[in-house]
Length: 223
Image 1 (cartoon, rainbow, N blue to C red):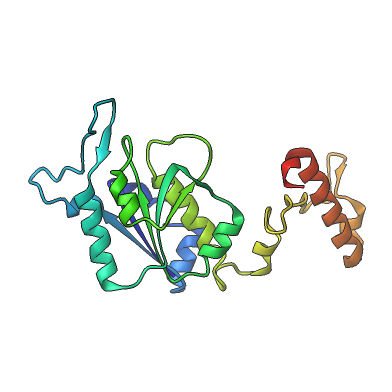
Image 2 (cartoon, rainbow, N blue to C red):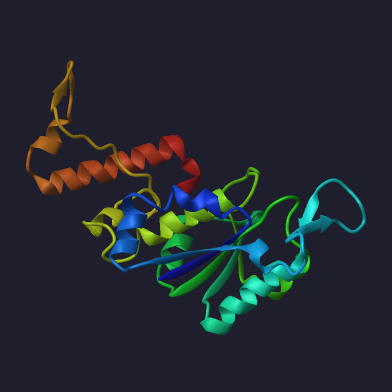
């Protein structure tokens, strides 16, 4: 899978993609992440990417040309399955969307800033709009990192145990059950006996019941 991220702050991605699962996926050749500075595609001397909005009002708007130039250049080199804009008014991001995106070959993630991007970019180029929650961030970089992480970890071969992702929260429309490790007794707080029993049928039953219980308590809207 190849993910191209368009941003005016490329340095933000230095940390999130240099460690752990994403770094492992890149080293294995299972994923490519390419960061593009939108300012490099500006045609004016100041390399500006924003301007005042028509109609007045507070906040600057990201201009058409730099974004369009970048997307057009990328699309001239390969086909893209999705061109995604990270925006608070997009569709709420869910595990099922991550599952679907993880099966694609090439996607573009566009990070907005300021008051937003010129609406015509959304109408001409964008195929999907995603929000990571009902709140506003300073830009689309952190949401892009979230989406990237959630997708790449699902690619076969990335996780050392591929079944691990299948038992994550939301994969079966439930929250995940409680998990335990050594020691079996910590200051009188003991691991449930069923998990020490070796009876995997009963363990699976316990895990399902606890997942259902936790979901009812914390996310009854999912039931």
